[in-house]
Image 1 (spheres, one colour):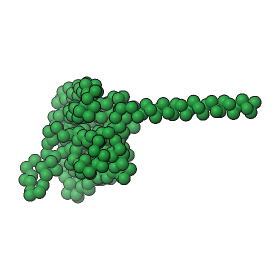
Image 2 (spheres, rainbow, N blue to C red):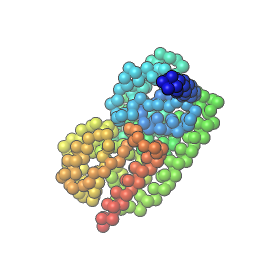
Image 3 (cartoon, rainbow, N blue to C red):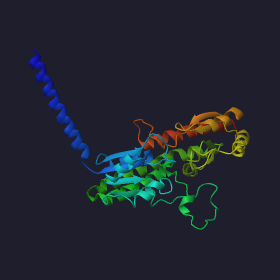
Length: 311
């Protein structure tokens, strides 16, 4: 009996080793693609489909202020393709592309061909000597479904240049994503147009492109980075605004402390609700655009409630 059990164990070990080898071989097929953070990962993964191995180096926190570790740099250096969002967001990535030790790595900047707009409040700012005009641009394009589609097209085009045999597949996948993103806006824009409330308050200004697309306005407690601390004057201004314009909700972010939003909530009685800028992996089974659609629906439902209370 003991000999029989040993034989069974040996056979099972052989099967497991074989399966592990097959899995390794399956994972090594196609390109090895490294991405910077969740939105870029999600777009690249959808464009790539099952053809390549796609992973991200930053999934546990926001991209603002992130610096890659030595192992992150090594993973990028060992990859076939590295995809990031924008030089002005991931400045380390912009510097890295000129310093990769392996010349075979294809580096893709997702927003390279996108037309970015200046950050709210900096529209009339005059450039000073040595300043890069791009540094004044708002990079939060990934919260707008239409611009997500545009970035997907850009990634597909450049991925196709690196892998011509699959260029048509990449572009077809990107076009489907673009079509779906436009459909979300087509669904919600008329709904927002019927609302009396046209302004929403967020923890940081990550939704300017989305707000413009939907014909509404965003008021942020902090600025472009969610780690910024608002001044006492800024908090006072927002408190006055929410009282005057019947704002009932401040939208916070799941991975950032809501302490300043809570201060305003305690003072004015407004409720807190979550509106994710999707800078981190939501860790669910939905597609990126499905998560983005849920965001927009949450925003609509809250603003619709506020509209009912307005005269």
